[in-house]
Length: 329
Ligand SMILES: NC(=O)c1ccc[n+]([C@@H]2O[C@H](COP(=O)([O-])OP(=O)(O)OC[C@H]3O[C@@H](n4cnc5c(N)ncnc54)[C@H](O)[C@@H]3O)[C@@H](O)[C@H]2O)c1
Image 1 (cartoon, protein in one colour):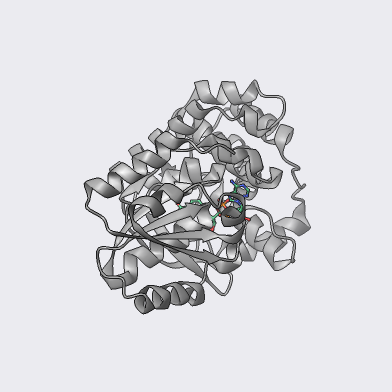
Image 2: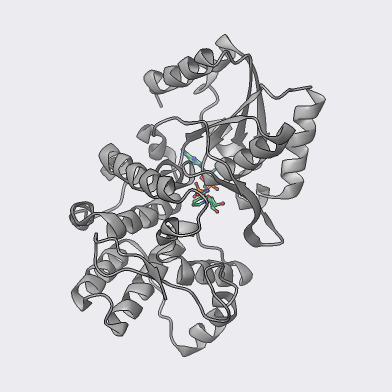
């Protein structure tokens, strides 16, 4: 892949502008192996050290964070070091958490390499780690100092399941905020990296940043971004517990289908909109049938959801495609 020199130069300029001397790049092993030279302009301008962690969710732990804290301490980095998180959502979450906590917070930059990170995880400042398979249960909200805009050329090497995962979140942004974007996604027959338009990525970033600016601490407006996540998280947890994990955005797509059906059943969303969502999701994802036995298996996970109030399972309520109305029921 030919790196987008402008994007990397943007990062170099930012670091120079802030008189940065020392930079630590955090990457996972896959990204480092595929793109060992992408960030080499940093090494030419700064004292730059790279830390590589194993790829995958299993690295998003306190143990891994501690290893990184120790490495930063051993190398005697001070408060002025900048962490550059180079990878997908796992790296943004883990590196963001380390940056937010090392010396009570050092500057942090995200360079997203998955579709999911480009449109979602690299933005908004949610950082953290999993504890004993409980996802994101320890962390802080701290906005990154910079997110390098998406270089969609990275998508060319992304495994198809990971592309789908990002696409699930892309559908979510369209459902919430844009009938135009939703119609454009409906016009796509197959999902390949070449089909993902940079302007779609930019739209999602705009939507996310707008909502996060209204509610950075995730207490009200921001929660609309959890559409599809009540059922989605439960499905993700159930599949993981059964030893058959599904990527986050794939679970969210399936969750959106079932949450839309539920809203249509309650009369909150027009049947036609729920059907359009169902058709779009079915075109790109294998949708499992949730019969009664499956619902029974999902139930314990639904009751663990963080959107629950008292003993009621919390769902995000939306009223139509692209017509953001937000209330939890
Ligand atoms: N902070 C947030 O707001 C937020 C939002 C959504 C999800 N998340 C978190 O993000 C994580 C999921 O992120 P993800 O889907 O990006 O997964 P990921 O970071 O685990 O990456 C998925 C896989 O793709 C590989 N990869 C990354 N870039 C690649 C590239 N360009 N080419 C080839 N392979 C590449 C990785 O090595 C990994 O194996 C989860 O931990 C989730 O909780 C965070």
